[in-house]
Length: 360
Image (cartoon, rainbow, N blue to C red):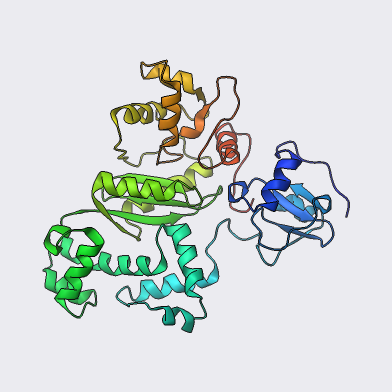
């Protein structure tokens, strides 16, 4: 197999080699790496041993790699849905869904052939909490759901599988910082992982509004979760509610090119300045861009360009509050928490340059 000329939509070769060598997740969906010596093609994040740079070629998608005669890697499975849950995760989540009241131990995981540390890392990266914290939150969420529906604390505890009221009240106190009766009236933010063509995202919503939409691989995600917890005095429950289902439906339509304006209600508390910036971002039309100076001028403070850039970076509802539409005054792409090439993908989608799909 011989190297082919690079597609103009691809990043520079040197940049792709570095991204592939370092397994940079923000390049998922940006390019496919084909290995000339083995005849296989891989995702940018493939964990297999990296070939020498002179032995790789890059393609914009899996179709082009297949057409060139390469076959998919069995380790990173580039033909599967981008960011899809591994089979062992899907099985584990099904077990939790079947019995949210089960108290999981490390040995339970080992009995299923799952190393506890592996589960801890995956859930921490994709749900913002360890697997044990996830399972405890599901269990407590079941109890809090019963209490919010008017059941007594005792009844809710028993239905959630707690054997003693002391254990239940201690768990509620540790989880929410409140006693059981106060917790029944506290704010709950439901969290769920949503697949998108530019990578998996973690979404969070109360019963009435969306409060979080972040790429799961963004380093700032833990900080955003801490800020939400502080701002809303809330507890996190890893479960999709109707607001998150609605968000997923709208995201699917957006990536299919069928939706230009999101309708999900938003709640984005912050400083007065941050809220002005985020409100101004919502006014940047689909398919258009603005500069940081434009944004600063629109909020009546043209000298606050750097502060506007910081507020832009602090946006915790990506895509819906379209911080990806902000570019440099010279028209260049500038910083984006999800990665510059995700930003380019989103802008290209909105300009009708390309059609995104889950299979590259």
